[in-house]
Amino acid sequence: MGDEPTTRKKGLTGFLIYAIFAAVLGMLQFGYNTGVINAPQAVIEDFIKDAYLSRYGVKIADGWEKIIFSIAVSIFAIGGMIGGVGGGFVANRFGRKRGLLLNNATGVLGAILMAFSKAAQSYEMLIIGRLIIGFNCGLNTSLVPMYISEIAPLNLRGGLGTVNQLGVTVGILFSQILGIQEILGTESGWPLLLGLAICPAILQLVLFSFCPESPRYLLITANREEEARIAMKRLRASSQIEEDMEEMRVEAQQSEAHMGMLELLKSRALLMPLGIGIVMQLSQQLSGINAVLYYSTELFIGAGLASESAKYATIGVGAIMVGMTLVSIPLMDRAGRRTLHLWGLGGMFIFSIFITISLLVMELIEWVRYVAVVATLTFVLFFAVGPGSIPWMITAELFSQGPRPAAMSIAVLVNWLANFLVGLFFLPLRGALHNYIFLPFSVLLAFFWVFTYKIVPETKNKTFDEISALFRRNDREEFATQNCILTSSGVGSSTLAVPVPSGTPAHTESTALLADIRTIKINAS
Image (cartoon, rainbow, N blue to C red; front, side, top):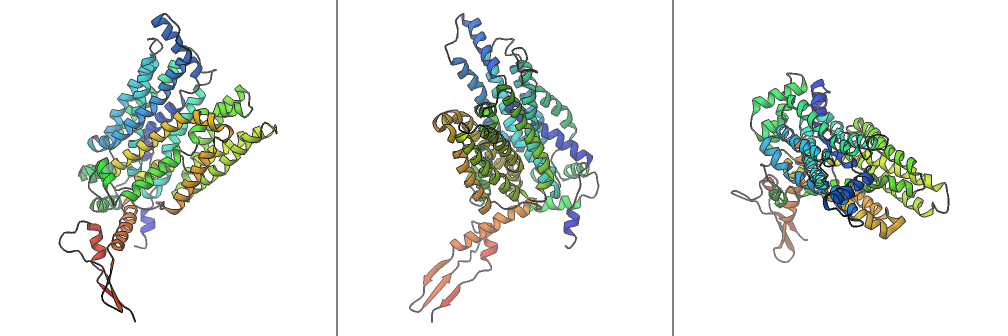
């Protein structure tokens, strides 16, 4: 056992890098379509007006073009929720690899509908295209983190899990750069801008076809050990894979049976890891980062920057997210997930306060406008350190193979729902709170920091079975405590009776603990 830490050390192989790159194209698709719609808003609204006029011969009522545009924006999140809910079913029914490959058909279809919506003079095609590409991205956000966490070596799982967020941030940055007016953010260029979503789908369809299925899925879910062994040898570029195979066999023995979303929600033993996974997703989406991403240009203009400067400051936001996500990759398996998440949330809390103070006093002091810009960029920097990447990976880490797909479906659904609600309510909230708009996010960040500090376990360098064992142990202890019955046994004495189950107990995990506990008498003197 003394050489266990060294035997667990495994490095990157060329084929593992290839497989992760091919998989993470799905997250790049998500990032690209999150950011691509914002820059060409004005020219798309003009297209909606022209399409309505050519179809009905009258001008559209004032303001309706904005309503139709907002539907096109928000329906992306609705598609994401539908795709996220289906992630568990697809992962179990088709496998991680085939599920991702089949999903690219929806990516291609959505991109084609958006690209040809102007030529067809149909804003309905634009809306349907955004719905379908949202479904594609929702399924990607469930399947890609699951696949990467299952193929990554234990000692690199945190860093490689961060690649999920790297794909998202690179996609957002591409959309911001291509969307400026000098490139594709024009009246003639926006259909191509939206249609470029076909590129990640086609590229993944080609590259991912040569990647293996997740060995964990093959062995534990599909019970195809020989195929799992072949896949593991390809990923590790070595025939010395017995340690990996044994780890998966142990997980298979300890893993809960395959369960659907409703079964998972009813499972008392898995309530704690599910709650942690949900709150971690909320800590990403309700941190205020979407307010910055969706409305960063308006925020910078409101802070006093010229329109042209604000546009490039927004691109700076995307560049910072990419840069800091790269920095966090080696830190993830050194500092640990929990530590980095605490640093990220803490930094975001502090700079959300700075943003609020800056917005309040910048009309009185000219140079404070630049403090608001710096505070906003630093806020994004701390987001990239932890909350940007950790929620994607930690949900997959908290569950064994059986409930993992259902857990990812629930977590992704919560993530997309929170994303949708922030996009829906941010503008009305800003109208009500004005310069205090970031205060609700400050309160939420404080709550998420305390929750992470008190509740979230560190998963660094732990196998999936070791992480699951943390919750099994806590559940056994709680069960034993609840079954300790203090009864009176006459004057001057009392008996602490702990029942010992016999036969076939309802809670198998608790039997191991309770079998060693006997009735303890406490005699009062």
